[in-house]
Amino acid sequence: MKKSRKDEALKGYLFAAPFLLYFALFTAWPLYYCIKLVFFQFNLGGEMPFVGLKYVARMCGDEVFFHAWRNTLAFVLINVPLQVGIALLLAVALNSRIAGKAFFRAAYFFPVIISGAVTTILWLYLLNKDSGIINQILGRLFGMAPIGWLTSESLAIFSLAVHATWKNVGFTVIILLAGLQSIPRSVYEAAELDGVTPWESFWRITLPLLNPTFVMVVMLSTMGAFSLFVEPLVMTNFGGPGDASMSLFLYIYKKFSFWDMNYASVLGLTTALVILAVVVLQKKFLEKEPYF
Image (cartoon, rainbow, N blue to C red; front, side):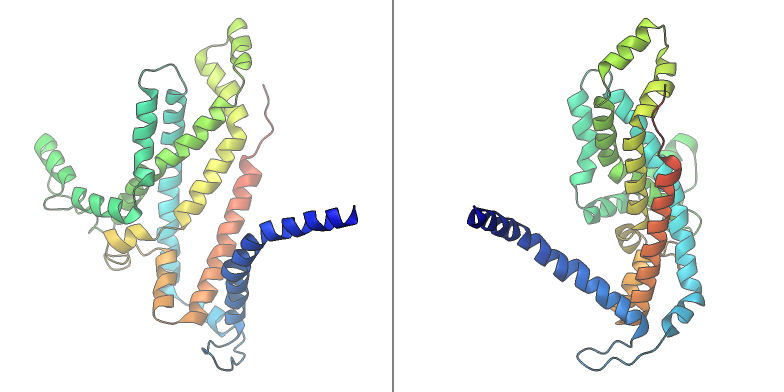
C-alpha cells in the first residue's frame, strides 16, 4: 500500500518536473537576478559590488522614463475602453440570432492569429502620409490634406492604439462571447414573461451576470496595453517622432540592448509593480456580486 502511494507521488513529481524546471529557469531565477541587480553592480562572471539605491535615484531623475509613462498611460486610456467597448457590442451581436455568425467570429478573430510584426507592416502602408489608403480615401471623400498619422507627435499614440484595438478585439470578443453563453437562457425567458424589455434585460441581467468575465477582460486588456512594444518599434521607428511614442517596454528594451543591465532591472521591476497595483485596483473596484 505504502509502495503504491510512493509510486503515485513519484509519477506526480515526474509530471510536474518539466513545468517546475521551466519555472525555475525562466521565471524564478531571472526574477531573483533582476532584484539582485537593483542593489549590486552588474559584472558578467565577476564580483558584483554593492551600489545601494544608485540606480533608483537615477530613475527618479530620468525625464525619458516619465515621458514613456505618459505615452503608455495615454495608450492604455485609449486602447482599453475602445477595445473592450467594441468587443462587448460585437459579442452581444454575435450571441443573438443573426445569419453568418460563424463567418463573423472567424473574421474578427483572424487578426489575432497573424504575427504582430506582419500587421504593423500592413498598417504602415495603410497609414502612410503620402501613399496610404486611409489618407487617399479621406482626400477623395472630404478633400482633406494628407495627415501624418505616424509622423505627428499628437497622433502617433492614437494611431498605435487604433491598430492595437483592431489586432486584439477578436480575442476579447471570444472571451466575452463565452461569458454571454454561460448565462442560462431560463433567466431571459423568465424576464420576458415579466415583460422586461431587451434594453432592461441587457442592463439588469446581461451586464451583472457578465461581470466576472468583464473584469477579467479589462484586466487582460490593461496588462496587454501596458506591454506596448512591437507597434512603436516597427511603426514609428523606435518610439518616434522624437520620443512621442516611446513606451515603457520599448525603453526598458533599449536599456537592455545597450547592456545597461542595472538600470533596465530597476525600470522593469518598477513597471511590473505599478502594473500589478493597477490590475489589483481594477479588480477591487470593478468586481461586483450579481444582483437583479
